[in-house]
Length: 166
Image (tube, rainbow, N blue to C red):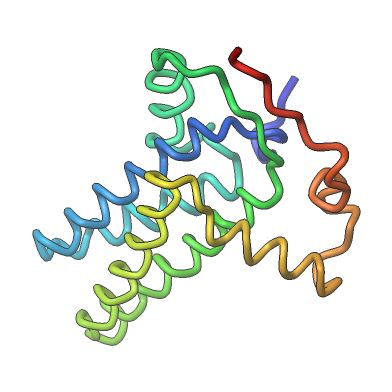
């Protein structure tokens, strides 16, 4: 039985990339439409995914339960802790953007943060480059994040070997 407040480990990278694509779309919609309430929707999604994985995130549920299973790709399992860390960065950015706009009236700064978020989400969705995961790896190398947080991240020999398609 999975608990509500848990994050999946491992994570299907296909689903993660679909979620990132959804963040790109929602982020661009926020900027183009100048609808600041969408900042709150973005922030909710990231906080929900940090706390529960896809369980309370509409975008996470759409990616994991509807879209990814229908794609002609095998799941590509990657460690969960770096993905959770990346979602945490997204939560910090979107909460900051919301505070900048709603508490201080600094809409331009709020939207600038969302542009940055869209750039990182685009890298993840299109190229599979998770900037938050790279920061997580750097923090592990610097011993800021202890090895116990992600043993698979620490020991490259534990990673799943790619399957040959020949």
